Each structure stands twice: as C-alpha cells, then as structure tokens.
Image 1 (tube, rainbow over the protein chains, first blue to last red):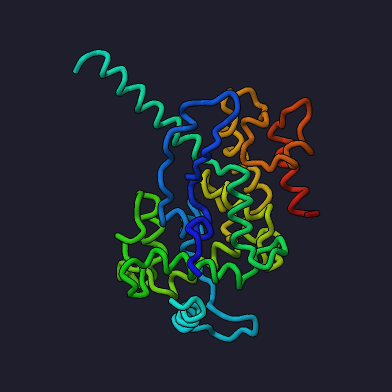
Image 2: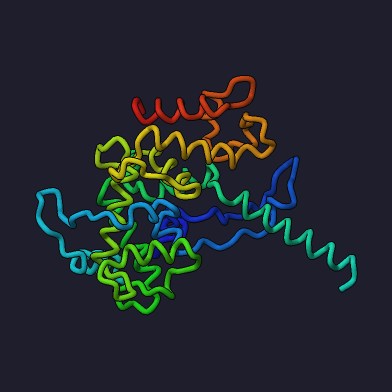
Length: 82
Length: 207
C-alpha cells in the first residue's frame, strides 16, 4: 500500500486546497496557491530541529539493547514490500 | 515598464507574501488530519513505534536515489534547514545516514513529549507543529520544553495569528485551534494570550 504524502508531512506547511471554497468573507490572498511542503520541513520539524539536532539520543529499544537502524529500516521496507 | 504593469507586479508580490504569512501557522483541520495519519492504532497517542514507522516512511520518500542516506540536494530548500542539516550530520560527510537521521527524529520525539509519558498526544503534537513555525528557545538547555519556554513561544504564535493586533484572537484568527477548544475557552467570541497559555497548560497537565 502506498502511504499518502499527507501522512508523511509531519510538520509541513499546509498546502491543501479546498474545492468548495469559503462561503463568505473570501480573501483572495487565502486562495492563492500555497508553497509545496519542503522535505526539510517534514524531517526537521521546522524550527524544532534547529534546536534539537545536536542532541544525542542512544538508539536503543525498550530493553536498553542497541538497535541497528539499517536493519530496522530494511525490515520496515520488507513489511511495506518496498 | 508601464505603470499599470508595475502596480500589478507589486500587488501580486504583496498578495504572495500575505499568502505565505498566512500559511505559516498550521490550521486545525490539517493538524487533526496529520495527527490521525500518524496515530495508526487510533488511541489518541503517537507512540515510539508509530513515530519510527512514520520516520522511515518519510526517509524513504525523501531518499530519491534510494542509497539509504539523505544528501543535501534531496532535502534542502532553505537556510534554516541547511543549518540543521549540518548539526545532524554528526560525522560531517555531507549526508545523513540512518543512524544520524534516527538520532534527530528521536530527539524531536522526546522534545515533543512534554509530559514525558513516552507518547505524543494531540496537544503535544499541536504544540510541536506550532513551535516548529515560530521557534523555541531552550533557555536552560535541558532539551525539554518547559512551561516558561512554552509561554514565550505561544506569545509568538499569538502575535502571528492576531492579524488586527488588538490583543484578542477571534475564531477567524485562531485557525490553528480546534473549534471545540476555541469554543471552550473563548469569552465574548475571543481569546487573549493569557487564556490561550492557561488552556495549553491545563491540557498538558490534565489532558
């Protein structure tokens, strides 16, 4: 199953378009095309990433065992048949 | 260039700027939708597994050449991101591998988990999105969002949303708030900063 882009846009700018349009008080500026979400916005959580990027969090599971993220990612890809 | 054309150009530029400014704060429906997409078991919390799966999906989408690393060109679009990229690139090889990426994503998760219960509820998710737009200063450098720090950031959110600068947010201005939340805290159809901050504190403490 392909995951919709909106599911991945964790912290992206809103770029949705309503085809119904506002019923009243329509503001032309609000109807202008919005910028497409930038991948960096998604990954870095906007300005939060700027603050926390240098923090170190050990890659461990709940039992305190180290997790090989490459293996975890490969396993995730297999479950998604990617 | 003819005067009319110049005026049109300036108007178009201004309209574009206004549109971008309005796009800065996420709107309630998008916040709810994004949260539900991550909360796959529908228990109103994003746990570590859900977060990790979503992070892998995001990584996969961005890794255009599928080499299991993110290069500058695959994700960078603005100066802020470039600065963050450099910090996240622990070994300085100008790419973010899965370990570096996971360090970053886990750091974001633990920061968003304000009440430290190993999950992100909707209020925390909403705050993460809002602070992602206006910024957050980790004053005491403890890597956690404290109430005093939250208050400062919410002041920026409020200022950005308060379009007529009257110190009150109407429903039309507080578009980032869920309608039922706004209705619960509004007095005479508006919300001031003090009420907004108190509302978030209450939701964080008592759900």
